[in-house]
Length: 318
Image (tube, rainbow, N blue to C red):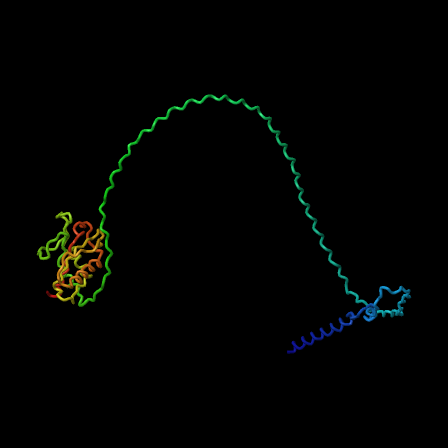
């Protein structure tokens, strides 16, 4: 605490001492004399107090009015300001000498333009050669007549048989499945016959044959079972229709080499049962829905046209 008190007291004393020493030498704030200018005020009435003149009046001599002389005021003696001693500078500080200005760089001399080269004189005109004599033109040789070409008859256009347009597939309608069992439906597809197969009452085993009649191209029993199983997963027989045991549908299916259905399957048989159309439509939808079929491409001649029997009698116990 004592050290701070001593330091504060010493600082205040130093500031007070510096003010006492520096204030007496300050210059007084004096205002110099101001020069006064005399101003005369002329009333406006003297300018507006004019008489109306007459054109036919006589000219009279009127003494000119003498301007009144105003007493000149003697200028007051100017008060001389109190002379104060100028403060002597403690020490004259020499002014810094300015740095010498840099010499301007001389402008580069412009190259003197070369005089233009003299233009060559135009050559003297050469004398025109004499015009050659016109020789008689030889008589033109007779042009041979073109041979008459015999018009060739174009070959008759080959007529190609038009392929039947593939009809658009009909929309598939889902029917409610009642007690669906793939094992029982696989048993309903009892026969898969080639395009020229036997009758529905044939007891021969199902097989696929070539359309050209070659006996060497046949399908194995496992390939036939695979085709039956694939179609059975997509078939919904009309189990609730009246006389369902009589609804045996035989379809002729046309397949492409990739296993897709080439055109709408054909219905090979018909019955008097009014529900036969529903059963035939469900069989046709099953064939279209399960395509494409995975069949061996090497045996395409055997399965390109097949007849499939859809018999619901086994499912209904008929």
